[in-house]
Image 1 (cartoon, one colour):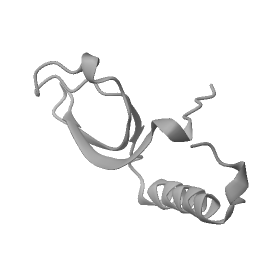
Image 2 (spheres, rainbow, N blue to C red):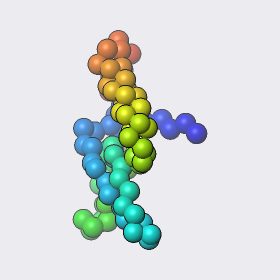
Image 3 (cartoon, helix red, strand yellow):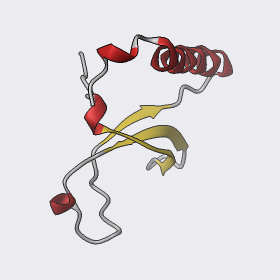
Length: 87
């Protein structure tokens, strides 16, 4: 699967999500909020904004591995040639 998120859709908003399953286990995720149409938003309790959600792995080793991957993404954002971006 490939997911394309264009720079025009990116926002600086990042949320920590916590969801309790029907088994009583609480799972956490990091959620990158995207720009989306205000026409989609109804009551505040119904947050149906566009987002990319990354559910956290359970093991600390895998969490560190994924954190390193996201740090590499940040490095690419900071160092890639500026004239190749989309605004």
